[in-house]
Length: 377
Image 1 (tube, helix red, strand yellow):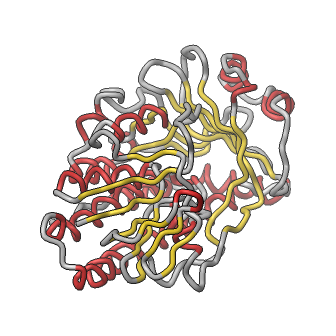
Image 2 (cartoon, helix red, strand yellow):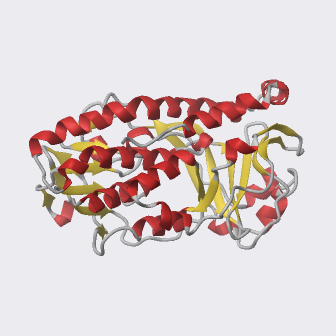
Image 3 (cartoon, rainbow, N blue to C red):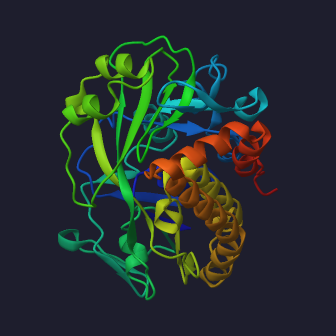
């Protein structure tokens, strides 16, 4: 079976590796000419590790992770340092925070040489043919996997593409240049602002800072000190330990509307191309890995003995397996992100009071439910 994966992100590389291991002939088309360090991190949970295990990728990823979960309390705080809600140790027992660049390298290591073709931009998809612009056309793929993010050209070629919607806020993301000793971890709420931080395996800290903004804002890094410099420790130390000129800022977006289907004919979508959501629950990468694991499981019987007539039915089964779960989690992430951005003093006070008075198990439940997932047999 010949498979063309569009996009060399987490979902695309994971799907490519799994299908290649199953015996498929795979190419990955990536518009970037070369891969650069991202300077950001992400969370992996038990469902993400279950997907990696199913794909045969857990070992190389574990090799670049801390052996255990963060050794500090994890929860939600107020800007003055008051703990509003704390996660039970069991909720974060499988949590590992990884430098996105390290994860990318680990996934690349599972692919045969020359699988990834950099510097190729897909312009669109029509009748099973990928338009590669100056590079020509690609017509002979049995399966096309759109793993090309929220502005997916594969998804955009289908009628009914909802496009991206701005969430009303953006975020800086960075990693400290040196280790920082953390007394805790998690996320701090202000009024319309948030700051989160978690340790990496080598003591450096991955952090993010969220602010309300217009979609086209390009804030200066100096604004970080103005907004968060007086927040509780260790936030000022984290900022001081980071070269802020290298901190990336992006508007936060999601799909404007849920898709009616992830699959059409011989093409299907994974990751942000299918269900882009705010990073509130830390599940974006995990769901992309789940997508890859389910897709590989369904296509494995065709990998070395393809029957083009069976492909649409297999991809339809993938859609039915993935769409309800991913869209439910996307809705939850959007609602939680919106609540975190409340800037009215009275409303923000009520939110914080509710978090402080509510049993911690309610917050635990919100983060445990997405982790309850097993790959198909």
